[in-house]
Amino acid sequence: MNNLLDTVRFGTEHETDDVKSVAAVVCPPASHFDKWAFSVTTALLLHGISEQGRAFTLSDAYSLSQRPGIVDELAHSPVGGAREVAKNLMRARPNELSAIMSTVAHFLGVYGDACAIKATAFAI
Image 1 (cartoon, rainbow, N blue to C red):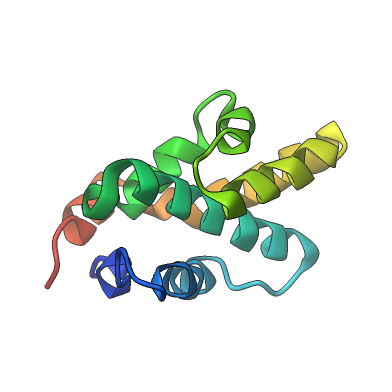
Image 2 (cartoon, one colour):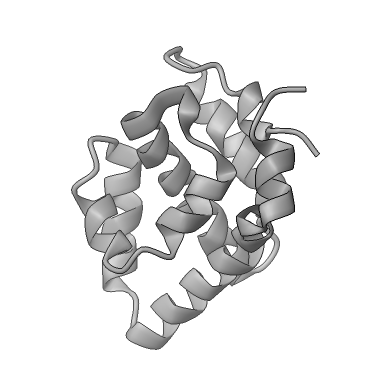
């Protein structure tokens, strides 16, 4: 395992596209909820990177996704794409929002495991 975020060209015009590529590997957008999970994961990564830069990890993204009030936090993100995703999430019915966030947790959950945290913490 390696740190997929090492492929992101931070602070360049390619940063958002690189983050979307990472999100597509983590959450392949196949079904309705997978597509939502891809969008939310992209928003979480962009938001986290805006706050922590290169120190942000996929484990951090999982922790962020589990934070109470994360949708509201994304709605106030300095990243426009994260704010847009949050706006769309706020329009979802509560049961749909719950399913979306469960799907996000399903895909990012592996990065919350202690072994995965250690394996993805540094570039190889």
